[in-house]
Length: 384
Image (cartoon, rainbow, N blue to C red):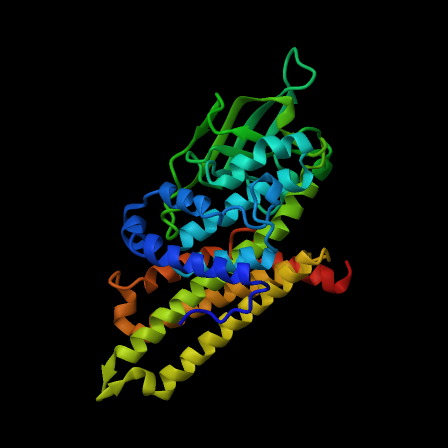
C-alpha cells in the first residue's frame, strides 16, 4: 500500500500524486527489462525533468520549484520504491546542482542552473578517487593555472565510482589547487564534452545496473575561469555541505526501496496459500511484516526530521548522518526479510525482491559508509 504522507501543502500533495502516476505508467513497465539489459535510463530522466521533478528544492527564478527539502525527498522515495537506479540518479543530479545554487556567483546561477534544473542536462558528482574515498583531504586530482592565462585552469587526475560517467552533460569536480591539505581543494564545473575527459569501462556491480559507475580521467582538461564554483580553496567546505544534503537523498531512496520490498512481500503473503489459507494469516509471517513496516516508518520519520531542520535553516549534519545510517540499515534488513517471506520464489529473478536486496547493500556504502556515519554521529554527541 502507498506510504501514508502528511504533506505541507496541497501543491506538495499533488506532486506526490504526479510522481506516483509517472512511476506507475512510465517507470514500472520498464524497470525489470532495463535492469537486466543494464540500459542507461536517459529518457526517464528527461521525463522526470519535463515534469519538474529534477528541480524541486531549487529557486523558481532559475527554473526550480521552490519546494521544501522534505517534499523533494518524498518524491525521491516514491521513485525509489519502483526504480532505485533512477532514484539514486535523481539524488546525484540534485547534488551536482547544489554547489552552484548555494556557492555560485549570480552569473553562474543564471547561466548554469536553468539547464541543470530543466532536465535538459544531467550531472555527475566527481569527488571520490581510487585512493581517496572517505579521506577527502588526500585527494590527488590537481587543477593548475593554465599556461599563458591568469584565469583558466587545467585539470589532471582520476576520479572513481562516478555515477553517470560517460552519460553526464557536466561533471561537478573537486580538485587540488594548493598543497595545504583539506584547505587546498576547489570546485569546478567541467563540460561533458571537454577534450581530455575520458571514461573507463563501467564497474561490474552486483546491483543498480542502470546506474553506470566508472572512473573518470582528466588528462589536461581545460576549464574556463568562470567554471570554478565558490572561492579557491573552498572545495572541502562545499563538498561536506553538499554531502549532508546528499545523505538525505540516499536515506530517502533507501526508505523507498524498503517500502517497495515491503509492498511486494505483503501482496505475496496475502496471495500465497499454504495449509488451506494465506501465509499472511500465520503469526510468524505477520509479525515479520509488522517489523518491516515499523522499520520503514521509522526510517521515513528519521529523514523527514533532518529535512525539516534543513528547511528551517538549522544545523542538520548529525541528523543527516543518523537518517542515512538508520534508513540504509533498515533497507538491508527489510529487503532480506522480504526475500524470506517469498521463500524460494524470492530467491529467483521471477520476482524483483532479489534485485531489491542487491540494491540495498550499496546504500550502506556510498555517500559515506555507515561506519563514517557513526563517526560523524559520535563526534557530534561527544562534542569532539
